Image (cartoon, rainbow over all chains, first blue to last red):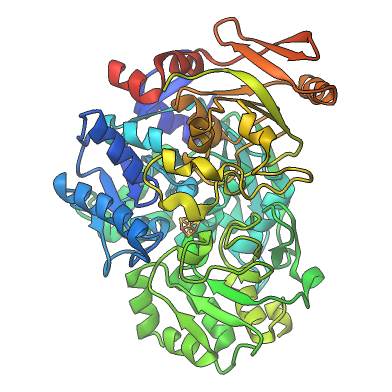
Length: 426
Length: 176
Ligand code: SF4
């Protein structure tokens, strides 16, 4: 019997199996941000174990509220900053260099095929786009990861999702994943790895694959995962060229992680996406999705383009192409947060920032702030946001507020029209 | 803190109760567990539920439906239960991270089949339900109006070891 990519990664990283079915894995990356890490740091100090297992494998960023908005968030930032300095973490990103964790860490080339990655953040599943096993964990798992470089998981079962056909013009990875979550339901993949395959995925850029894997958790999935291929090698090449003689050699090496053809899956789902429409959420769960056309005309108060789902340069390009020469409706306010400084400066160089500003958008620094209702775009009671983020829970972006999840194209078109709008109809 | 797996029970009759409802993000700026205490389930959307009510204040056990604790990885969700003395959750199913966070903190996230959960909800119609969990025996005794009903449950050896060790840090520190 063959193995899935997740099974191969588990096998190669197995440190211990204290009980049948409990796999303790050695970790290649432990990622940290200022919301979930400080309590782990404080607890380690309290236990007299203020140590790190490997300062080159731990990466940290201040991204959720940055620059700090008040004394409490300043303290969180300070705790992470002091800790990173104390332990001489080489890769610590503070104001001026920081950006949304799941955009920043991949962009720095930290995630490679076959890696095991944890972070105290549920959207860590994003990094599976590189053919890594990457899972969100709580602060206690993070603490043990920092101290010991291990994490325990149940043996993962895998759901394989084959996405086939030609994605129509104007339909994006975000529409695909919203559609898939609608099919699976919010707990359809609990305790499972979701393996994304098929020609739609093969043709996707790394950015699009990250959008796909980012929302695996919204179906309950432990990790989303894509097979490493030429696209992966091309993206990582600047970071791995010392390691391999050629791209071909890297590709050949990465191929060892591919799921075997006779691998065992808990479930295999096939979707032909040739006639997929842009999708949007309604209500307060990410599996409440429908085609944008069916929601067209619904009013919104705020447009938010950014986040670890859709704040990458490709996303900004798509939105800017729609906004170019247009103004957003008087009835709405627009906020765009390029996800990292690199993306910000790319957008600046390409004239994208200018387009956003001329359209009437507020451009913020790279941060999560609005996505989880902490800063830079929190909603008031009764307000509605058209957002490119990943979560539409009640009150997510502010108590009493409502969120409709959508692609950057739909968000840009909605900004222009002031009501939910299919960009293809603009 | 010594964990107690028994006491008055509150029934939350909804699936997919998410971590934003259990502890809203605006409180994630706290850096101690204790500071979360007043905010348990503050944003829960559920008819008849009062986050300031006595039923919640007295509760030591929560019973709910499917996919409890979905959403963010914030361990603040188990912590807000912990500091309010709620160390046992019983539901049909959980989101993975929340479930692991409970056991990692030495607390219980027990899964029961739908038929048992239905029975518990039916009992709640008769008055205040008091639950007592025997972790090693994997048994729940639920008492209402002087009558006790028993339920069997199953948790993995690993989860049991975590509860007995007092959490994952203790377990891992001993072993790795
Ligand atoms: S952008 Fe939103 S979902 Fe992503 S890490 Fe930040 S807060 Fe979480």
